Length: 439
Image 1: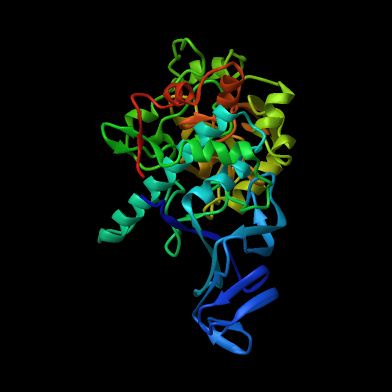
Image 2: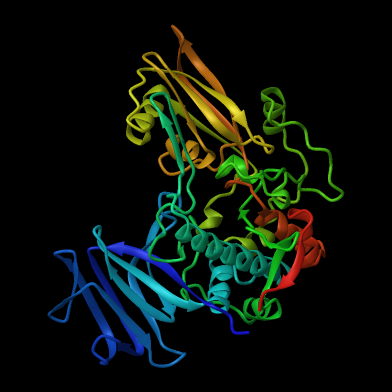
């Protein structure tokens, strides 16, 4: 059975510059094209070569052809955000919307996976780690295709926000991917085409696991992953819609697995976060980290346990700028109301001198309490320099990097370095799963 093709959303803009390396075919006119190209967004249409279009598809004339897209934002809204030119194989689709021109790459799923594991981590990672990542990336992607199809068949709109006057709960998953299957940034899976050089090892890892996915009770697994769990992985419903997946249970990142303290309790969470327990992802081994992390990811060194401090002015400004029109007055306290199995905060009460609000889920908390994003929502709060009930500073001490659900990439890298196979790695992080072939 042939592997399916997918549509990946790369960016949206009002002016798009790109170039074709080798020939591409404009399927509207049949013209063969090479070299520099430019399109503009005018009157809600794509202006290209003197004509206006709603959709233009460029087809590669050969398997070796690729296009280069200028000024792509990577790590959008995260602390490593930057712009770079990126190269992609496969088809190029430009679609006019009310907001601008959406740029979409049509690519075979197995080619996509080679790029993903080279973009998510270093393509020089160990073979067993790359094979594990190929399986979970494939599983996650096919699960999203299933979810997209179900949403299109359903009459009910996708709901990702629960809101009233004093409560704002939001999760980020499928809300804006209507024209394509997945996006190219960390919101879905980091995909940078052939910009990051793949290696024969990455290509071998994808080829040797071709069509292989995780299944639980015969159903395809929505396999999630993050950089560093912080010692315990999180459950799905802490971060996204309130659905429990048995294979995304809390896992202590050790073998044999040690008992997990009840990190939903505030005292236990504080003791856990302020300590530094052993775990696969508790490492400063630069060789391992170089294999797992791309150059800009290596800018983050304090991922297992971290600390940030905000002045009253800084945190008030963040909440004013990034909150949902919050008018709270002076910030008096940050109180975790609900934690997940890893200690990640699902709901946080922000107490102000004028009023209080509750925010969630974990990514919304991370977004609001940082210029970009906090490393994770597994943190405890210290109120410092308190005067008349108002702290002059807030100290947040935290654990882990990312949502913490499913495979821990740094932990999996350490497991691979210690001789575990990709199957053993997958069975450690995803409970009760089987590996099956989809094609």
